[in-house]
Image 1 (tube, rainbow, N blue to C red):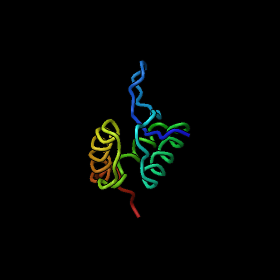
Image 2 (cartoon, rainbow, N blue to C red; image 1 turned 120 degrees about the horizontal axis):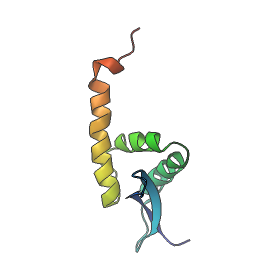
Image 3 (cartoon, rainbow, N blue to C red; image 1 turned 135 degrees about the horizontal axis):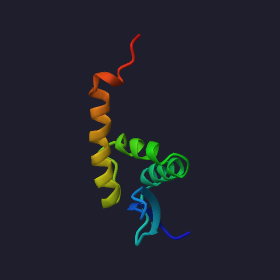
Image 4 (cartoon, helix red, strand yellow; image 1 turned 45 degrees about the horizontal axis):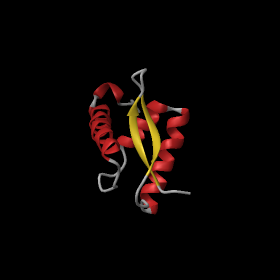
Length: 90
């Protein structure tokens, strides 16, 4: 199979979807596993896939579009975590 990488695309509906595209060079196995996991989540729960993308380590190499959305959803995840209304009482 030809090397592929994951891209984030905005569909006509406005939803962000993950799509695989042909790559000139093979991606490393860690990146391939992250991209495969994100793609699988996106197929069943697109909102969760974006949240998980926001939690991917900044040191992980991703395509430029995935880097953009990771930055956006990292900020979103941080905001959720810091919001008192999302805190569960014990």
